[in-house]
Amino acid sequence: MDKIITLKHGKEDSLLRFHPWVFSGAIHRLPDGLEEGDTIEVHASDGTFLGRGHYEVGSIAVRILSSDPAEAIDGHFYARRLASAFALRVKLGLIRSDNSTYRLVHGEGDFLPGCVVDVYGDTAVLQAHSPGMHYARHIIASALAALPEAGIKNVYYKSETTLPFKARLDPVNDYILGAYHTNIATENGLRFNIDWLKGQKTGFFVDQRDNRALVERYSRGARVLNMFCYTGGFSVYAMRAGAAEVHSVDSSAKAVTLTDANIELNFPGDTRHRSFATDAFKYLAEMPEGAYDLIILDPPAFAKHRSALKNALIGYRRINEAAFRKIAPGGILFTFSCSQAVTREQFRLAVFTAAARSGRRVRILHQLTQPSDHPVNIYHPEGEYLKGLVLYIE
Ligand code: SAH
View 1 (cartoon, rainbow, N blue to C red):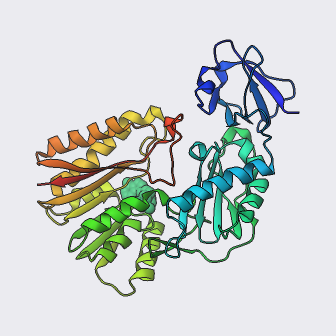
View 2 (tube, rainbow, N blue to C red):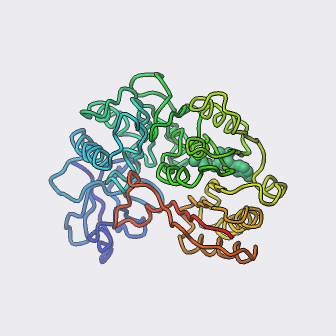
View 3 (cartoon, protein in one colour):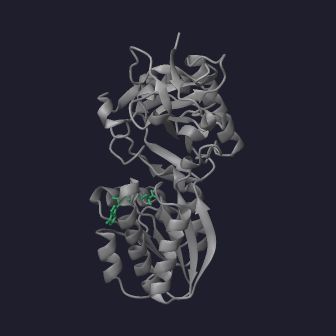
């Protein structure tokens, strides 16, 4: 029998609206012997069953997995959720011979709060963001490997940096199933070395796939600057489009090496590409005016928490202003923010301010977001994080 957490009177409303979190302030009583990561039942103050989920210590105390009183959280539960997530990716047209890179599970957006799974060919990289998902990792890995047609043979568990630090779970990044096999995956027919062992996040920023394809549409004949390039995703697409030249910049020398390797993998010996390991602000300040027709700014999350918001907005304003001042007339700017703490309106205002200060005439061509394999549960708007604008600068 799962233990029962009872809510304070009147605190059941958000769960009745299908929001998947219970905040600690809403809890009336915790049962004896409760351990972090336990699967528990949540009841309203009158004893009505509201849902079943994972308990953790912190402001988010429970992440709801199911609101069906008859549904147990066991191997069958994970198998059903994963099968439905995979069926959606099939419907989205992501499972193709020329595309083996996609996000299979996007936490709350796939009704598996606290769980992220990115797939690279026959390897799935599993990330737990909650103690409950950490304890479920072996069950999830088996369910992943058993998914018919997904072809997953290896499951790499990578949660050293994503689990709450205070939970003292000491997760070790390692294979739960299979072992190192091949780390080359395809995205829209382009090939990428994916380093899930040492790379950032799960090894690749799967969430920019659609936006990379849009960069490809605008890159023909253009001089392209890909700022914050990491694995060089945008650069590789720009090269395929027939860009006149592509420059990739990242402050990390490792990222630049990864970018060079991915360019070499797709366009061996192509001299249109050059990369620079240097700071973005420095590069933008020193580059000559009019040197680029298309600039991509995809920085790391400047605000990881709300407390950093003000400085983050200044950061966005500064890099965008530098790009507006320097981009060639008729240029196209792709600018992004992946900070969940920054709203779409705040980001737009930072970019607007940057444009106004540059004195250029600027029009919005596209408003971008995360791709469909990063779905947002409509009852959990917090799941939306990626924002982008494509601007035309005269
Ligand atoms: N655009 C990439 C993802 C960017 S991740 C993609 O499509 O995959 C952010 C990158 O910014 C990281 O690789 C990090 O090394 C780099 N970075 C962080 N601060 C930087 C700075 N001040 N100047 C240049 N690069 C920076």
